[in-house]
Length: 283
Image (cartoon, rainbow, N blue to C red):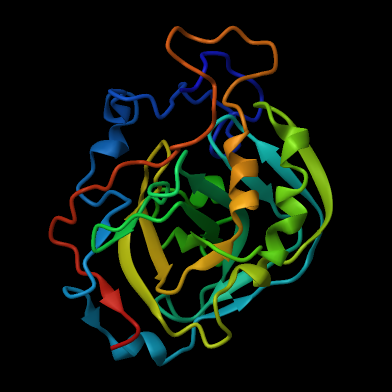
C-alpha cells in the first residue's frame, strides 16, 4: 500500500538516524526489520471483556487528563496515518500511571478501515470498529523527550478511543475539513485551534481497560501502558470518508504494481495476549 519513496518526516517519531521503510502491505513482516516487533507483549490485542479483571486500585487516584487547547496545531499526512502534532503542553496523570509521574501529550494519530466493518487496531470481543484514535503520551518526569522514553519502563502511555459512525464529531471538524488539503504523503496544514478534551468520552473517565503492550507502529517498542475507553466516539460517515480519500504516496509518485495508493486499512493485526492481564476500572 505504501510507496517506496522516503521523505522527511516519514518516521513515527523524529530521529536522527533513518528509519527503514515500512507499510501495511499484506505479507510484510515488520519483525524482520524491527526486532522489537517480535516481542512477547505486543499490541494491539483483542479485549475479551469477560476475562478482564476489575481493579479498584485504578480508581484510587482518578485518571486526570490536564489538556489545554492547542493553538496552531500541525496536521500531517505521513503516508501511514494522519497525525496532529500538539505544541501546547498537556499532561496526563493518575489512574494506572505511576504516582507522581506526568505524561505529556505528544500527538494524536488515526487508524481506519476502507470500509466500516474494520479499521480499529484493538478489537472488543473480536468486534472491530471503523476507526481508532490514539493520544500518545510520554513520561516527562523520567525522560527528557519522547525519543528517550520509547521502549523504556513506564516510558509511554497511550489513550485509545474507538470510533463509530453516527453524528458529526464537532471537535474533529477542524481536522476533517482540511484533509482535502493534505491528501498526499508529506503534506501538512496548520489549524488555528484544536482541543484534545473534545476527544474524551465523559468527564468521569471511569470506564476503561488497561494492559501493558507496545507501540502498534514500528519500531513496535514495548513498555507502553494502554488505556482503552469502553465507550466509543462518534463521527459522521462524511467525516470518515474524508480520511478514506487520503493517499500513501507523494503527489505525482509512480505507484508500485498492484497498489492503488489509497491510505486506509492502516491497522496492525491483533497480537497474542500471552500471559498478560487486562484490568478494568469498572465492574
